[in-house]
Length: 348
Figure 1 (cartoon, rainbow, N blue to C red):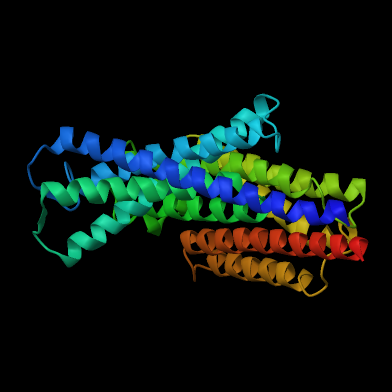
Figure 2: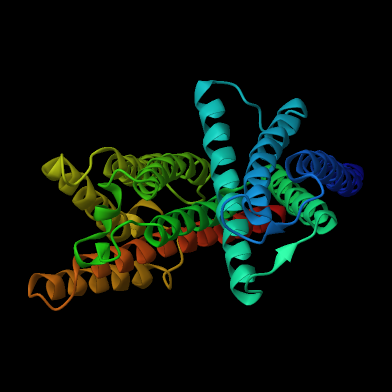
Protein backbone atom coordinates (compact mmCIF):
# COMPACT_ATOMS: atom_id res chain seq x y z
CA UNK A 1 0.00 0.00 0.00
CA UNK A 2 2.86 2.32 0.80
CA UNK A 3 4.61 1.71 -2.51
CA UNK A 4 1.44 2.36 -4.50
CA UNK A 5 0.61 5.59 -2.71
CA UNK A 6 4.13 6.95 -3.13
CA UNK A 7 4.14 6.26 -6.88
CA UNK A 8 1.40 8.79 -7.67
CA UNK A 9 3.09 11.83 -6.04
CA UNK A 10 6.39 10.81 -7.66
CA UNK A 11 4.76 10.66 -11.09
CA UNK A 12 3.01 13.96 -10.45
CA UNK A 13 6.31 15.61 -9.51
CA UNK A 14 7.90 14.22 -12.67
CA UNK A 15 5.11 15.61 -14.87
CA UNK A 16 5.32 18.99 -13.14
CA UNK A 17 9.08 19.05 -13.62
CA UNK A 18 8.74 18.24 -17.32
CA UNK A 19 6.12 20.97 -17.78
CA UNK A 20 8.35 23.53 -16.06
CA UNK A 21 11.31 22.49 -18.18
CA UNK A 22 9.25 22.70 -21.37
CA UNK A 23 7.97 26.16 -20.39
CA UNK A 24 11.48 27.35 -19.60
CA UNK A 25 12.75 25.99 -22.88
CA UNK A 26 9.96 27.81 -24.70
CA UNK A 27 10.94 31.04 -22.97
CA UNK A 28 14.58 30.59 -24.02
CA UNK A 29 13.52 29.89 -27.61
CA UNK A 30 11.31 33.00 -27.61
CA UNK A 31 14.14 35.23 -26.37
CA UNK A 32 16.81 33.89 -28.72
CA UNK A 33 14.63 33.88 -31.85
CA UNK A 34 13.28 37.36 -31.13
CA UNK A 35 16.80 38.68 -30.59
CA UNK A 36 18.02 37.17 -33.85
CA UNK A 37 14.92 38.56 -35.62
CA UNK A 38 15.90 42.05 -34.47
CA UNK A 39 19.33 41.54 -36.02
CA UNK A 40 17.84 40.12 -39.23
CA UNK A 41 14.99 42.58 -39.83
CA UNK A 42 16.10 45.53 -37.74
CA UNK A 43 13.27 48.04 -37.46
CA UNK A 44 12.01 47.43 -41.00
CA UNK A 45 8.69 45.99 -42.06
CA UNK A 46 8.45 42.55 -43.69
CA UNK A 47 5.85 40.66 -45.74
CA UNK A 48 3.83 37.87 -44.14
CA UNK A 49 5.08 35.08 -46.42
CA UNK A 50 7.50 34.52 -49.24
CA UNK A 51 11.22 35.35 -49.53
CA UNK A 52 12.63 37.53 -46.71
CA UNK A 53 9.30 37.38 -44.88
CA UNK A 54 8.43 36.97 -41.22
CA UNK A 55 6.72 33.70 -42.12
CA UNK A 56 9.85 32.29 -43.70
CA UNK A 57 12.04 33.34 -40.78
CA UNK A 58 9.59 32.08 -38.16
CA UNK A 59 9.22 28.71 -39.91
CA UNK A 60 13.00 28.14 -40.14
CA UNK A 61 13.63 29.31 -36.59
CA UNK A 62 10.79 27.13 -35.28
CA UNK A 63 12.16 24.11 -37.13
CA UNK A 64 15.56 24.53 -35.47
CA UNK A 65 13.94 25.11 -32.07
CA UNK A 66 11.70 22.03 -32.41
CA UNK A 67 14.54 19.74 -33.49
CA UNK A 68 16.83 20.88 -30.68
CA UNK A 69 14.01 20.74 -28.11
CA UNK A 70 13.13 17.18 -29.07
CA UNK A 71 16.76 16.07 -28.81
CA UNK A 72 16.98 17.87 -25.47
CA UNK A 73 13.85 16.12 -24.23
CA UNK A 74 15.22 12.68 -25.05
CA UNK A 75 18.51 13.56 -23.37
CA UNK A 76 16.70 14.67 -20.21
CA UNK A 77 14.95 11.29 -20.09
CA UNK A 78 18.30 9.62 -20.69
CA UNK A 79 19.78 11.39 -17.67
CA UNK A 80 16.83 10.23 -15.59
CA UNK A 81 17.30 6.67 -16.76
CA UNK A 82 14.12 6.16 -18.80
CA UNK A 83 14.62 5.23 -21.51
CA UNK A 84 18.39 5.22 -21.85
CA UNK A 85 20.23 6.10 -25.07
CA UNK A 86 22.56 3.12 -25.12
CA UNK A 87 23.72 2.62 -28.69
CA UNK A 88 24.15 3.93 -32.20
CA UNK A 89 20.65 2.83 -33.20
CA UNK A 90 19.12 4.82 -30.34
CA UNK A 91 21.06 7.91 -31.41
CA UNK A 92 19.84 7.48 -35.00
CA UNK A 93 16.28 7.14 -33.69
CA UNK A 94 16.59 10.44 -31.83
CA UNK A 95 18.13 12.18 -34.85
CA UNK A 96 15.37 10.97 -37.19
CA UNK A 97 12.60 11.96 -34.78
CA UNK A 98 14.20 15.35 -34.14
CA UNK A 99 14.38 15.98 -37.89
CA UNK A 100 10.75 14.92 -38.25
CA UNK A 101 9.63 17.38 -35.57
CA UNK A 102 11.71 20.12 -37.18
CA UNK A 103 10.21 19.48 -40.60
CA UNK A 104 6.69 19.40 -39.17
CA UNK A 105 7.28 22.79 -37.52
CA UNK A 106 8.79 24.18 -40.72
CA UNK A 107 5.94 23.09 -42.95
CA UNK A 108 3.18 23.90 -40.47
CA UNK A 109 4.26 27.50 -39.87
CA UNK A 110 4.95 27.98 -43.56
CA UNK A 111 1.41 26.88 -44.33
CA UNK A 112 0.02 29.22 -41.67
CA UNK A 113 1.95 32.16 -43.10
CA UNK A 114 0.74 31.44 -46.64
CA UNK A 115 -2.88 31.28 -45.44
CA UNK A 116 -2.52 34.54 -43.52
CA UNK A 117 -0.86 36.17 -46.51
CA UNK A 118 -3.83 35.22 -48.68
CA UNK A 119 -6.19 36.60 -46.03
CA UNK A 120 -4.28 39.91 -45.62
CA UNK A 121 -3.29 40.66 -49.21
CA UNK A 122 -0.32 43.06 -49.58
CA UNK A 123 -0.13 43.56 -45.82
CA UNK A 124 3.24 44.00 -44.09
CA UNK A 125 4.28 43.32 -40.50
CA UNK A 126 5.90 46.00 -38.32
CA UNK A 127 9.16 45.29 -36.47
CA UNK A 128 7.64 44.72 -33.02
CA UNK A 129 5.07 42.13 -34.16
CA UNK A 130 7.88 40.45 -36.13
CA UNK A 131 9.80 39.91 -32.89
CA UNK A 132 6.72 38.76 -31.00
CA UNK A 133 5.33 36.43 -33.68
CA UNK A 134 8.61 34.78 -34.61
CA UNK A 135 9.49 34.30 -30.95
CA UNK A 136 6.06 32.91 -30.15
CA UNK A 137 6.15 30.35 -32.97
CA UNK A 138 9.58 29.15 -31.85
CA UNK A 139 8.43 28.97 -28.23
CA UNK A 140 5.35 26.91 -29.09
CA UNK A 141 7.37 24.61 -31.34
CA UNK A 142 10.04 24.03 -28.70
CA UNK A 143 7.43 23.45 -25.98
CA UNK A 144 5.45 20.91 -28.01
CA UNK A 145 8.55 19.09 -29.30
CA UNK A 146 10.05 18.77 -25.81
CA UNK A 147 6.84 17.31 -24.37
CA UNK A 148 6.52 15.03 -27.39
CA UNK A 149 9.99 13.70 -26.61
CA UNK A 150 9.19 13.35 -22.92
CA UNK A 151 5.96 11.43 -23.49
CA UNK A 152 6.92 9.60 -26.68
CA UNK A 153 5.23 6.20 -27.08
CA UNK A 154 4.23 4.08 -30.09
CA UNK A 155 0.83 5.79 -30.40
CA UNK A 156 2.35 9.30 -30.49
CA UNK A 157 5.12 8.08 -32.79
CA UNK A 158 2.57 6.73 -35.27
CA UNK A 159 0.79 10.09 -35.36
CA UNK A 160 4.07 11.99 -35.76
CA UNK A 161 4.97 9.68 -38.63
CA UNK A 162 1.64 10.23 -40.38
CA UNK A 163 1.75 14.03 -39.97
CA UNK A 164 5.36 14.16 -41.17
CA UNK A 165 4.64 12.04 -44.24
CA UNK A 166 1.48 13.95 -45.20
CA UNK A 167 3.02 17.40 -44.78
CA UNK A 168 6.20 16.41 -46.61
CA UNK A 169 4.35 15.05 -49.63
CA UNK A 170 1.94 17.98 -49.71
CA UNK A 171 4.81 20.45 -49.60
CA UNK A 172 6.50 18.65 -52.48
CA UNK A 173 3.27 18.55 -54.50
CA UNK A 174 2.53 22.24 -53.96
CA UNK A 175 6.03 23.35 -54.96
CA UNK A 176 6.44 20.92 -57.90
CA UNK A 177 7.68 22.57 -61.09
CA UNK A 178 5.36 20.40 -63.21
CA UNK A 179 1.73 21.27 -62.35
CA UNK A 180 0.50 18.08 -64.04
CA UNK A 181 2.77 15.66 -62.17
CA UNK A 182 -0.28 13.83 -60.83
CA UNK A 183 -1.17 12.51 -64.30
CA UNK A 184 1.77 10.08 -64.09
CA UNK A 185 2.26 8.77 -60.56
CA UNK A 186 3.16 9.93 -57.08
CA UNK A 187 6.80 8.98 -57.57
CA UNK A 188 7.13 11.52 -60.40
CA UNK A 189 7.48 14.13 -57.64
CA UNK A 190 10.92 12.72 -56.92
CA UNK A 191 12.47 12.73 -60.40
CA UNK A 192 12.99 16.43 -61.07
CA UNK A 193 16.02 18.52 -60.11
CA UNK A 194 14.16 21.15 -58.07
CA UNK A 195 13.71 21.51 -54.33
CA UNK A 196 10.34 19.74 -54.36
CA UNK A 197 12.01 16.55 -55.58
CA UNK A 198 14.56 16.70 -52.77
CA UNK A 199 11.77 17.29 -50.25
CA UNK A 200 9.79 14.33 -51.56
CA UNK A 201 12.68 11.87 -51.51
CA UNK A 202 13.96 12.98 -48.09
CA UNK A 203 10.43 12.70 -46.72
CA UNK A 204 10.18 9.08 -47.85
CA UNK A 205 13.65 8.17 -46.57
CA UNK A 206 13.12 9.70 -43.13
CA UNK A 207 9.58 8.34 -42.92
CA UNK A 208 10.87 4.88 -43.80
CA UNK A 209 13.38 5.05 -40.96
CA UNK A 210 10.63 6.23 -38.60
CA UNK A 211 8.55 3.18 -39.53
CA UNK A 212 11.44 0.94 -38.47
CA UNK A 213 11.66 2.88 -35.20
CA UNK A 214 7.93 2.35 -34.76
CA UNK A 215 8.29 -1.35 -35.56
CA UNK A 216 10.79 -1.84 -32.75
CA UNK A 217 8.89 0.29 -30.24
CA UNK A 218 5.45 -1.11 -31.03
CA UNK A 219 6.45 -4.77 -30.80
CA UNK A 220 8.56 -4.52 -27.65
CA UNK A 221 5.67 -5.36 -25.33
CA UNK A 222 2.73 -6.75 -27.31
CA UNK A 223 0.44 -8.61 -24.88
CA UNK A 224 -0.74 -12.12 -25.81
CA UNK A 225 1.71 -12.30 -28.72
CA UNK A 226 3.99 -15.32 -28.96
CA UNK A 227 7.71 -14.69 -29.44
CA UNK A 228 7.34 -16.00 -32.97
CA UNK A 229 4.36 -13.73 -33.61
CA UNK A 230 6.07 -10.69 -32.12
CA UNK A 231 9.11 -11.16 -34.34
CA UNK A 232 6.91 -11.61 -37.42
CA UNK A 233 4.94 -8.41 -36.73
CA UNK A 234 8.21 -6.55 -36.20
CA UNK A 235 9.70 -8.00 -39.39
CA UNK A 236 6.77 -7.04 -41.61
CA UNK A 237 6.70 -3.48 -40.24
CA UNK A 238 10.46 -3.17 -40.70
CA UNK A 239 10.06 -4.35 -44.30
CA UNK A 240 7.43 -1.66 -44.88
CA UNK A 241 9.79 0.96 -43.45
CA UNK A 242 12.87 -0.17 -45.36
CA UNK A 243 10.97 -0.40 -48.64
CA UNK A 244 9.40 3.01 -48.08
CA UNK A 245 12.86 4.52 -47.67
CA UNK A 246 14.05 2.67 -50.78
CA UNK A 247 11.23 4.27 -52.78
CA UNK A 248 12.89 7.61 -52.03
CA UNK A 249 16.38 6.30 -52.78
CA UNK A 250 15.69 4.51 -56.06
CA UNK A 251 13.94 6.93 -58.42
CA UNK A 252 11.33 5.67 -60.83
CA UNK A 253 13.00 7.23 -63.86
CA UNK A 254 16.48 5.75 -63.27
CA UNK A 255 15.80 2.57 -61.26
CA UNK A 256 12.33 1.63 -62.46
CA UNK A 257 12.35 -2.08 -61.59
CA UNK A 258 13.91 -1.64 -58.16
CA UNK A 259 11.54 1.25 -57.44
CA UNK A 260 8.52 -0.76 -58.55
CA UNK A 261 9.69 -3.83 -56.66
CA UNK A 262 10.09 -2.11 -53.30
CA UNK A 263 6.82 -0.21 -53.74
CA UNK A 264 5.00 -3.47 -54.45
CA UNK A 265 6.86 -5.14 -51.59
CA UNK A 266 5.36 -2.65 -49.14
CA UNK A 267 1.85 -3.64 -50.23
CA UNK A 268 2.68 -7.35 -49.96
CA UNK A 269 4.18 -6.95 -46.47
CA UNK A 270 1.13 -4.98 -45.32
CA UNK A 271 -1.18 -7.65 -46.74
CA UNK A 272 0.69 -10.44 -44.97
CA UNK A 273 0.57 -8.54 -41.69
CA UNK A 274 -3.17 -7.92 -41.82
CA UNK A 275 -3.97 -11.50 -42.84
CA UNK A 276 -1.70 -13.14 -40.25
CA UNK A 277 -2.27 -10.69 -37.40
CA UNK A 278 -4.82 -12.86 -35.60
CA UNK A 279 -2.41 -15.81 -35.55
CA UNK A 280 0.54 -13.71 -34.43
CA UNK A 281 -1.33 -11.68 -31.78
CA UNK A 282 -4.24 -13.86 -30.63
CA UNK A 283 -5.53 -11.28 -28.15
CA UNK A 284 -6.02 -8.51 -30.69
CA UNK A 285 -9.57 -7.21 -30.94
CA UNK A 286 -11.70 -9.22 -33.34
CA UNK A 287 -13.45 -6.01 -34.37
CA UNK A 288 -10.13 -4.57 -35.58
CA UNK A 289 -9.23 -7.44 -37.90
CA UNK A 290 -11.92 -6.75 -40.56
CA UNK A 291 -10.61 -3.18 -40.83
CA UNK A 292 -7.35 -4.43 -42.32
CA UNK A 293 -9.15 -6.85 -44.62
CA UNK A 294 -11.43 -4.07 -45.84
CA UNK A 295 -8.43 -1.81 -46.49
CA UNK A 296 -6.78 -4.54 -48.56
CA UNK A 297 -9.99 -5.03 -50.54
CA UNK A 298 -10.21 -1.31 -51.30
CA UNK A 299 -6.58 -1.23 -52.47
CA UNK A 300 -7.17 -4.24 -54.73
CA UNK A 301 -10.29 -2.65 -56.24
CA UNK A 302 -8.43 0.59 -56.88
CA UNK A 303 -5.59 -1.34 -58.51
CA UNK A 304 -8.11 -2.99 -60.83
CA UNK A 305 -9.58 0.42 -61.67
CA UNK A 306 -6.09 1.61 -62.58
CA UNK A 307 -5.46 -1.49 -64.71
CA UNK A 308 -8.58 -0.79 -66.80
CA UNK A 309 -7.72 2.90 -67.13
CA UNK A 310 -10.48 4.23 -64.86
CA UNK A 311 -8.14 5.65 -62.17
CA UNK A 312 -4.70 7.24 -62.33
CA UNK A 313 -1.84 5.52 -60.52
CA UNK A 314 -1.47 8.62 -58.35
CA UNK A 315 -4.97 8.14 -56.96
CA UNK A 316 -4.26 4.49 -56.16
CA UNK A 317 -0.96 5.34 -54.44
CA UNK A 318 -2.45 8.17 -52.38
CA UNK A 319 -5.45 6.17 -51.18
CA UNK A 320 -3.32 3.09 -50.47
CA UNK A 321 -0.83 5.18 -48.49
CA UNK A 322 -3.59 6.79 -46.43
CA UNK A 323 -5.16 3.41 -45.68
CA UNK A 324 -1.87 1.76 -44.71
CA UNK A 325 -0.84 4.48 -42.29
CA UNK A 326 -4.36 4.77 -40.90
CA UNK A 327 -4.19 1.04 -40.16
CA UNK A 328 -0.80 1.45 -38.47
CA UNK A 329 -2.20 4.19 -36.19
CA UNK A 330 -5.25 2.07 -35.36
CA UNK A 331 -3.00 -0.93 -34.71
CA UNK A 332 -1.00 1.08 -32.18
CA UNK A 333 -4.19 2.17 -30.45
CA UNK A 334 -5.42 -1.42 -30.25
CA UNK A 335 -2.10 -2.67 -28.91
CA UNK A 336 -2.15 0.13 -26.32
CA UNK A 337 -5.68 -0.83 -25.27
CA UNK A 338 -4.66 -4.49 -25.07
CA UNK A 339 -1.68 -3.58 -22.92
CA UNK A 340 -3.88 -1.50 -20.60
CA UNK A 341 -6.42 -4.34 -20.27
CA UNK A 342 -3.64 -6.81 -19.49
CA UNK A 343 -2.13 -4.53 -16.87
CA UNK A 344 -5.57 -3.96 -15.30
CA UNK A 345 -6.26 -7.69 -15.16
CA UNK A 346 -2.90 -8.35 -13.48
CA UNK A 347 -3.48 -5.54 -10.96
CA UNK A 348 -6.88 -6.91 -9.99
